[in-house]
Image (cartoon, rainbow, N blue to C red; front, side, top):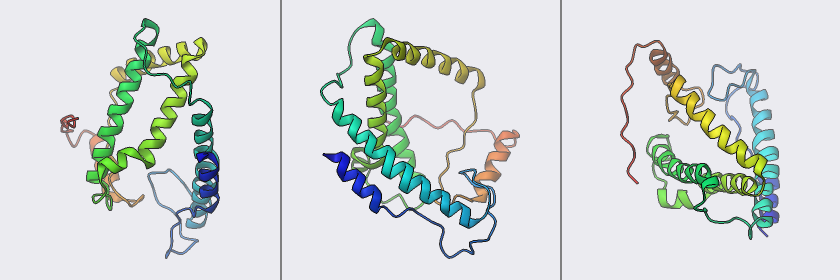
Length: 200
């Protein structure tokens, strides 16, 4: 079963750490919001990636997917599942658009093949999270209605707030260009250009 395979992989996984920099050096502003020095940053990244992500979360997803495998039903054309069907379709579309932006813009990722990326790795994990979440909601009316209410409240909040967001496209978590642009946009010094929707 994939659960044991992913668990063993997680135990063997070597978490990314910052090398070649003095451990006592203080961290500046970074996209993770981690404060302290390089040593504290490395400790957190080891704990998150190796223990939380690859030893607990991903193997658990594989286990849940295996347990629910016969009950992960396809979309139903019934009124009570309309919102979940919209979430399902939008989620998949988001993965396609995000992977395109991610692969085209993030440093060091341009050589990745999108078709391969869409079938495994991050895209696969995101689909597993969505499948487990929607499957739980399908068989429990309390969670089903929570999903419906959340979708409506989230839509209203997004329409009201219309939050600005600058896509992070650097392999460097301290990239100063990002924070300069972000500050300029938030202060109205730069007018955002509307990016055309990525073709399917």
